[in-house]
Length: 200
Image 1: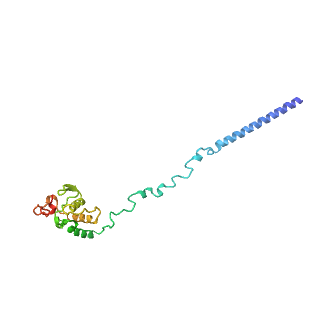
Image 2 (image 1 turned 135 degrees about the vertical axis):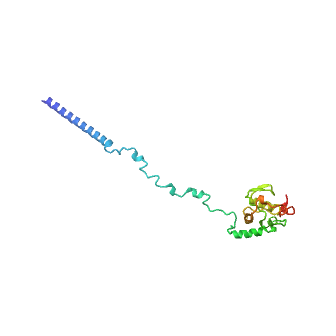
């Protein structure tokens, strides 16, 4: 009788132990299943590092900031004038040109631009730079003006940005009428041998 009670008690304890073990296993399995399958986003490796989840890097438009090229753009800055006093009136410039063209005091030889080219006579329409026989060189208009200033007129070369240079260049431009093939004979050329402009 006692032996049967011991066996029954052992079986009961064993059954209880097996039940508890199965229950615990079931709970563990359920918990594992729930953690892995119930919420598919819980273990999503992209949920934290996803760049789309952070602040959009494109929201701050780089073009909306101050353009870094604006300060370095040479055209963006205010231009520097080539001379202190700008000339804006063409009539005023041409009046100055007329006076300079006829002024022998520009040099020390006692001659003026008008000595060789009265009223602009003999100024040719061929565009500069071109070969100039007197200088035997290819010159720009400004260079030819200074050649005349320092040779026949025996004066000082004009500054490239001076009002005088601009005025004399404007005079030449306004009075060019002849071309090389229309050039008059030496007998009527004011730059003949008796004229300082006729020097070699």
